[in-house]
Length: 115
Ligand code: AMP
Ligand code: ZN
Image (cartoon, rainbow, N blue to C red):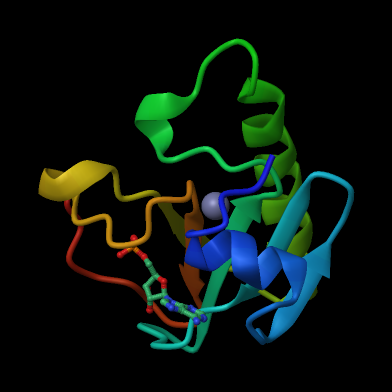
């Protein structure tokens, strides 16, 4: 199910261009337009799920597929020494696009640990 007003749904549909790094039946992944590290990939479910807060038993399989994709993408991107996965949720979490996404950040020794 797509949301016609959603930026990432439009990217998944190919209506807005993106730099694709991975795609399967459930997941689409592309490079962030404003990278915060040498590798900065966004992994999104092909189902419109607004955020982590909207994950439920009916759509959580998409989350599992996202994480399977994350492991594959990290290997393909050569992130052998590790990386960080972030999902900002809601206003206080700093989420700016209301379609669930996981940032893969890596390619450099990361600092600024929040947790
Ligand atoms: P968040 O702030 O966690 O919601 O993350 C949204 C991310 O989407 C930001 O890191 C933006 O740089 C990224 N972004 C916004 N528009 C695009 C786009 N057209 N293509 C790729 N990344 C985008
Ligand atoms: Zn969407």
